[in-house]
Image (cartoon, rainbow, N blue to C red; front, side, top):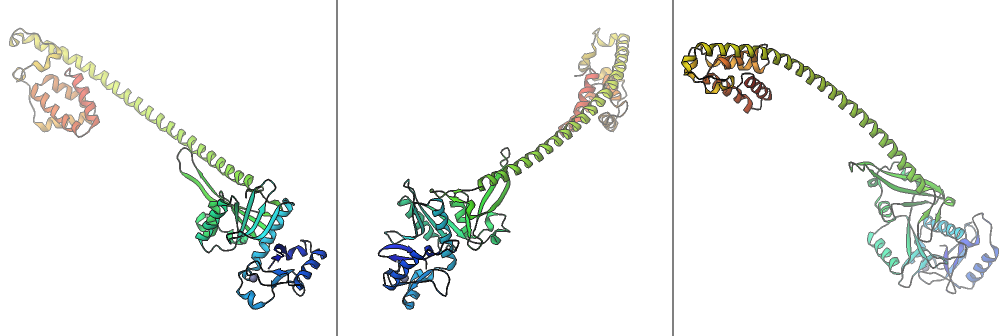
Length: 409
Ligand SMILES: [Zn+2]
C-alpha cells in the first residue's frame, strides 16, 4: 500500500522517491522513524503498519502482522490500481501545486474516494479510478453521495489501448465503458498505467438535418500522453481532443454534403433530360394531331356541304324546317332510314381503329356519325363509354374529338 496514517495525518510511501527516482531522504527518515516507533496505522483496519524500501525497490507500506493484512481490504488493492492513482495524484499536483490533495480519502460516512482534491477557489473534485465496475448500484450510490456533498466526480477507467483498436460502435464497449461514456458528457477516459497515457473516446452521431437520417454513428478515440492532459477542478478534461473530434465530424459532414450535392445535380440533370424528351414527344403528338385535325376539318366541311345539298333536295320531307349542322340530335331515325346500317362488330372495329389512331380512323367515325342517326350515335357512344369507364384516357380524348368534329359535342 501507498498510504497510511501518522498521528491521524495521511502519509504516502511514494513521496519518498519522485518520478525521476530521486530519493527524498528526509521524508524517508521520517517514515522509518514512525514505522519503528509503531506510529503508522492502517486507514482501513487501524492495525500497525511498517514502511518498506529494501529488496523491493519501490517505497511502500504493509501490515506489520501479515495475518491482519490478509483480512484488511486495503491489502487487496491491485498494483495497477495503486500505480494509476499515483499517476493521477501526481498529475493533479503538477497542475495545481498548492491544493489540498488526498489519495484514498475517507469520508465521514465511511465512503472512500480514490482521489480527492479541494481547490483554492472552493471547488471539490473526487476522481475514481476503476479497473472493473462490479455493481451499478455502487456507482449510482457514490455519485449521489458526491452530489449531496457538492463534490464533482470524475470516473476514469483502467485499460489498454489495444482494447479499443477494433471498437467502432458504442455497443461494442464493455458496460463500464459505455456507462462512463454516457455519464461523463460523452467522454470516456481510460488510463493506461503502463504506457502512462490517456485514451479518450467519444461517440459521434451525425444526422442529415433535412431527412433526420443518421449518417454517421461511430466511436472516435485519441491517445494523449499524461502531460498533454489537464483535469479541471470541475472534472472536465482540457486537451486537444475536442478540437480533433470536431475536425473529424466537420470533415465527414463536408464530404457527405459534397456527395449529396453531386447526387442532387445528377438527379436534376436526369430530370431535365426526361422533361426535354417528354416535351419533344408532346410536340410531335401535337404536330400529328394538328395535321389530322386539319385534314378532318377539310373533310367535314365537305360533309357539311354534302349534307346541305341533301337537305335542299329533300326539303319537303322535313316540313320546311331547316336544320343546322349542330342540330344533328334532333334528327329522327326515320330521316336516315336510307342509311345503310351495319352490325355492332362493324362499329366496334371503327371505334377501335379510331382509338388506336389508325389512319382515317377518326374520319370514318365522323362520317358514320354525320351520316347516321341516333342509333349509330348511341351505339358508338356506348362503345366509347365502356372504354372510358375502364379508364382508357385515349378513348376519352378520341371520343371528344370525334364528337367535336361531327358537331355533336
Ligand atoms: Zn489494514
